[in-house]
Amino acid sequence: MHVPQLLRWLPIGACLLVVGCATSPPPSSTSTPSTPVISSLTPEQSNGIAIHALGLVGTPYRYGGNTPDGGFDCSGLIGYVYRSSVGQSTPRTVARMSTFGRPVPTSDLRTGDLVLFGSSTPTHAGIYVGNGRFVHAPSTGGEVRLDRLDGVYWSRQTVQARRP
Image 1 (cartoon, rainbow, N blue to C red):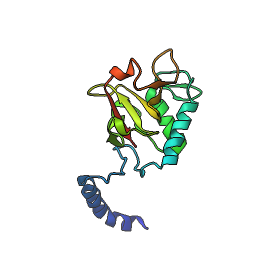
Image 2 (spheres, one colour):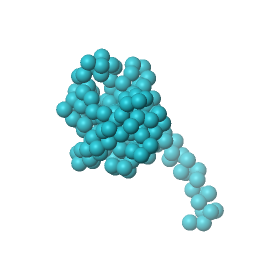
Image 3 (cartoon, rainbow, N blue to C red):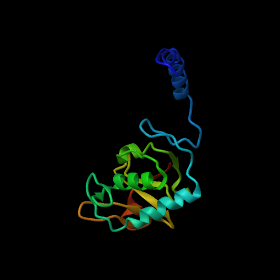
Image 4 (cartoon, one colour):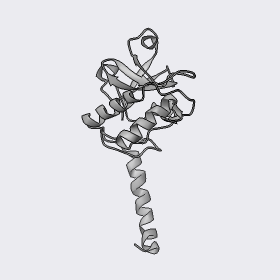
């Protein structure tokens, strides 16, 4: 299409964009302003995410880290696992992850879901891997580890779950 023809369609495209933003997304939508839309993850993809996350247990923690070689912080770990497992970009901060995907009750958690901790604005996140366990990058000086949601520390935290 030539540039003059493209410019002729620009107002129509802008109107469609405004109308699209004014409607509620379908239940399977996982978009945020900076995240591309993907359909709901298949059970195989969700399990692949969990397996990949488990394979990174023991990787050193590093603030701002987002690679196995350089280390991970919690959101960097999530971003790396989702990107390399299913090609999905995730928000870079935990606060922005609180609007990523759709909320699910913690009683309905399944592998690959995100678990976010903190009251009004979450400050920590991990990947649920099944059987009440999640993988996360907890703190400076630590390493990526597997913990239980019903553990002494985590059971006292406010938790929410998101399904991309």
